Amino acid sequence: MLIACPPRAASVLPPPRLESLFLEARGLMRLFDLEGYERAAERFRRILTHAPRSAPALAALAETYSFWGFRREAAGQECLGYYDAAYSLASQALRLAPERADAHRAFSLSIRRGAKGDRERAKREALIAVALDPDDGEAWHQSWRAAGYDLADPAMRRARELAPSCALENDCGTALCAAGRLDEAVLCFMAALRINPRNSLVHCNLAMTLDLKGMRTAGAEVLRMARALHPGDPLLARGWERLAGRASVFPEGA
Image (cartoon, rainbow, N blue to C red):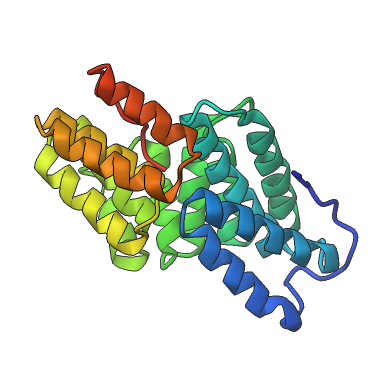
């Protein structure tokens, strides 16, 4: 169930006893897959039950729902409720802690898509996050994402230096593929799968890229392996249909 927790308590940070749960939830979110989003959201909601004014937990749950919503959108599933929850949570985090980079980062992500989509403000909020914490690699990633995945943008290189992740390698792969740099794109998708070998979005993007390279059999094998891991994943089913229909397209980045 989606929850936008109303602020009631006095503390902005999670109580010390919840710090390990917060770190665990952040690690799960950064798997950038359906399993991770579901498990991370449950833990963040548990934290907010005890500390409803925790700006870091609100921001992190907002980011989880933003990523989860996009993943559902890519699979053709309902996503607007996830985007709405992300916006509500990120707005609360920003009101509670406007000095925190993660609050601005989460808000930027929450207005990337959905009914509240505002690309120009998303760019501005991401830049504020970077200014508040220049060592926040996720803020640099969001800055690059919000600006449109330009491969010449130094924000992408800075994000890779500070916070390499499955999502970042996947985003780099999709940007390279869109630029026709297919061999480099494959290397990025392979790097993403080394970080999280179960990520079905990356499997799908890799399969479609291999198909564009004229390697349809290899792409189909990638999808077969992914479907063995996630037999009920509608994104993989759609990818299989695309390969079968010789319509090689792929979802954009994470």
